[in-house]
Image (cartoon, helix red, strand yellow):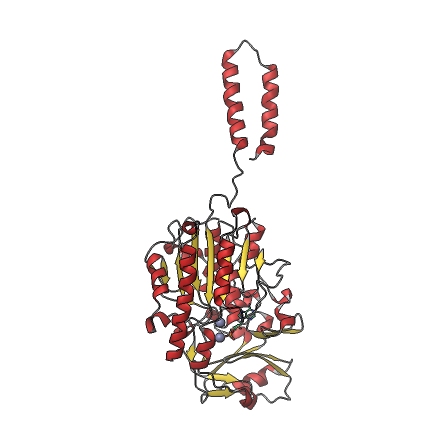
Length: 436
Ligand code: AMP
Ligand code: ZN
Ligand code: ZN
């Protein structure tokens, strides 16, 4: 109850005072006690869902950082964060294990089938338009972005948020962006991103974000180029570890350091491929067939016109080294294929194999991702340290849909409906009391 809600009660008490028998000392004492307590509670600040918790959360994504890179190379900064807080054995991405579907899953708690970014590029039959992360007209169109990203959930509940390049944060989803955000530009050096994050954290409390999302492109790019077992990839992993350490140390130097939860995740891992082991779809689906093909190695969506679905399926389903499903028959553990944007046939290469549209598109890449999420090479990382987290806690492998309810919990806000479950990971929290 705030002051105005208490006003009728205060008025009634005043009327009672006027009618009171002034000789009755007992009534006077009671009147004073009740009036004083009403006055005191009216002067207290309003208690809201947020005000009990003033912690700040910074979540950084390291694109393509495979779960076991720290076992392959020297990552002293991530090791330190694990010692100070939590390290998960691994984090399971959502299918397909691609960048856009997974970054958007992490911030909505929804499987790609449920939020709509079902691949890095796809066709949306309801909008009758293609989406591609590389095509600005579609990437900036909020019509493709379903669900409620955490910055909207937070904003609706009165919190300030910021993002330096998280997928979707520069798009006005539901007409809203984070309060502070940057339009994606991969050429901005990581050190400038760190400066801005520290600047945001140094703002006066009334305008300081309670949630900051940030993104580094590596080690994904180098993993594609040289593969996940190459010393040059390990060197990049080591550099990214240092850049994560710089941010961590600079946060630790802030006056508000004790109230900052720092989380590091990745969107997926990386699998080794060889340019020799490739299936080309055009060898089986002639160009003149009315079958649209979208996606990229190793996951494609086919949109066969009426009457052509069985022909396309028959043409592909016995091809070695790929899995082919009609959209309604994708195995349940992949949570994929119900969204019309998935098309009517889904093709994914077996691990270590590539699938391309045609032979001209076969590149020299030694690594890729997008495979079945039971392939542990696709698994991602999760580290966290701060006042909400236990120390030196080892978290068993969990799914990335659980991050959205975790962020909601850390911010003290009610999550929108989602596919995650905080109970799966509450063991990492010092105080796991869950809001209903
Ligand atoms: P992938 O093909 O799945 O490996 O995608 C990785 C690439 O996604 C990165 O190299 C970035 O260039 C790009 N990327 C990541 N975040 C964004 C963003 N918010 N907007 C546009 N492109 C992005
Ligand atoms: Zn990625
Ligand atoms: Zn990639």
